[in-house]
Image (cartoon, rainbow, N blue to C red):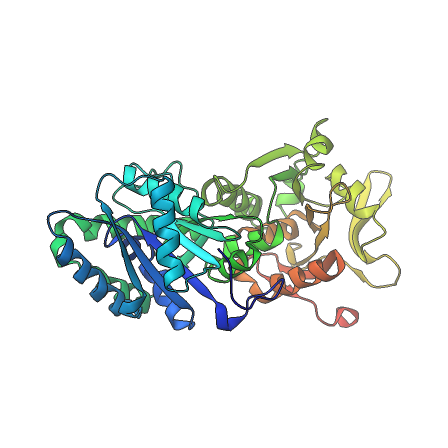
Amino acid sequence: MRGGKRRRGRIDKVTEQVLLVGAHPDDVELGAGGLIHELIRRGIETFIVVVSDDTSSGPLRRSESMTAAEELGVPTQNVLFLGLSDGAVTCDHDSIDLLRAACAERGIDPQLVVTHTDADSHNDHRAVNELCRAAFRHTAFLFLGISLSVETRRFTPSIFVELTRERQDAKGRALAAHSSQEQRIGLAARRVWEEELGRKSSLAAAEGFEVEQQIGGSDGAHLASTLNDSPLHRFWNRLAPTGDVVLVDDVDRAGAAELDLYPNELAFRGLDALRLCMTTQMIGVRRFNEVSSESAQAFQLVRPANAVLAGGPVSNRVARELINHSARVRWVVDYDRRGDAVTIFIRERTGSIRFDTKFDASGRIRDDFAVLTVMTSDFDPERVVVSCAGIHGVGTQALLLALAEPGSAPKLLDAMLRELAENGVAQRVLRCDGRTLEVDELLDLASVP
């Protein structure tokens, strides 16, 4: 199914359509009420299909669905009912033809289809997932999970829609319209699920969606990406849309001498935060591995993956090979070794600008400096290498923390992602507070003392 006026690589605003398909009345409101409210706010033509009817209360539930749609801003003429039997929905030749015919009659040709995940214990929900994937072509999908039946270990959302007060209120009104289902809907269980999705996405409460794309579905996938409110997932989905992530640890530099330079609690804060978000908030979205830079397997793991390098050339041999030996970068962390003494600093490869750590009167770090590098991998242009290299450990930890909490520096990271897309490499020299790990971008590099 595909029609209307389309342009390759973008969505023509006139033909933007999203279709939500629920097995039962109230399903799409439960799993995507906030999303629907946002689609309508954007002026996107939105349709709802209810696949089955309750044999005992079909007319009442249809009426409730129409009222609920109106509460979310969807015109009642955009709500369709297929009339299949509740509890006996199947994906077969007849149901596929029925869904296709209903959409064709209304001129529905969606770029994006929102329906149930197959990580669901309800047979009707799984059948509708299969039905939608069979009925549509050249489309992207968002798969929702409903608190009543989602299988939480198998449900792996990567698109999150924040439930702001406005969206939550609209969703609440829509669900209240399903008055015959008040006890089944279960307000408490729904809120617990929405808060759990919020924890996965660094938001207070959210709706979560798995995403899938058929060949030719890039327009819908782009639309889906613009709906993502999670700063963590939005950043990582742009940075590394596909592939696993491997964190390459530097050798332990947090010895007594190093820890005397800054508060001990900062020694591993960024590393711990990134490890936590990758193993909890990103679990199921992509695989995460961790390896020491001294391991014989380090380069073997880095080659096919997206790599995050912690530390500079003194402590991380992978960073030394991939960053300091690359002709593509402007800034490097370098060092002078004289006997047992090692002086580490940041320098411009082809210029004269140099940065050295600034200390306070007590000899502790006031300002460390660090280079954040994002570049396409020399091993695979579809993968990226991210280098977090401070002069001292505190600078490295500050950059790792920014990757774990991208909402803390959105303008900086957004600008670097744009440069990465255009040039294949982006770098920034950052000043890192030795007491708080806050980072500041150095806009006028030559003026820094």
